[in-house]
Length: 412
Image (cartoon, helix red, strand yellow):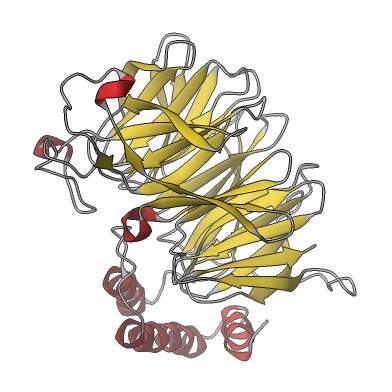
């Protein structure tokens, strides 16, 4: 852990308001410096300016760390020797990774957005085995309204089918003659921006073999455990697309509100949890009748969701609160919230449900959390703007996508 993080955590453990204000001021000043030094991330609405405004509001109200809900003593367990250390950093001129996703056996799909128009595929030897261009002929995939020879996408996230045969890729927007009104991060559902497409990649030959039309600015994507459905959160249209994998078509669109992002699906494939990032709420969708219930007031700007293997515990990154929460799905009770770093974005759970790994975008760190009691075991600096993360259950390696142009591999 670096000195700044240690100092910040020390201040949070004190009760004096002067120290609390000093801690917040330090973070604000640090983020201001980063805003001047680092290029705009260009993909999420919660940019550095918004982050600073939020922290300055905390400073002006300076009682936000005094209430019982948000005040949290940060406890660190001693790291075990030789564990949780960076073993490889991959840098390349054609890497602008928004996400990285593991696919069995031993492949890693890296989504490079519109900056490179590609999906890069790596193996366990840290070699790029293929760079898949995001260019498609939509007409050949049955979309008769799109007649150009080639359209480009902008790969955001990926999800892999349970049998490992297919990887599904969301595209932030499409590029081509029919796409004249693309969505953007500060949109409203009423804006009615262009739809986009999901690509399906055959993992055997690493080619795009289908494209499926969804809503505007699709971001996160998930495959149901039974393999029947692919769910997609459409950021600008404020809804969730349900895709039938047998026919590769959207069969349902469910409105949930502004800026839906993370998705977690129950082990029995009957319930989907949706983080609605423009709110403080999580939508709970019944995948049999598509009715929606809610978990209200879980925290500010919920972004990413992870369920444990039993479906009992739901973990959520609260990008606006700088916390990660553990929720009991049966009762909706928040069991505990912890501070991991500034702007926790994505996370992944180990295959044995023991450890949660969280990327902290503005702290440039990854935190390892013991899932049972939500104690932070270790925090490691990885590089500027870590935003995506995945876990290899065979090697116990954590791959991190840093938006500024690198992949970092951590051995646990």
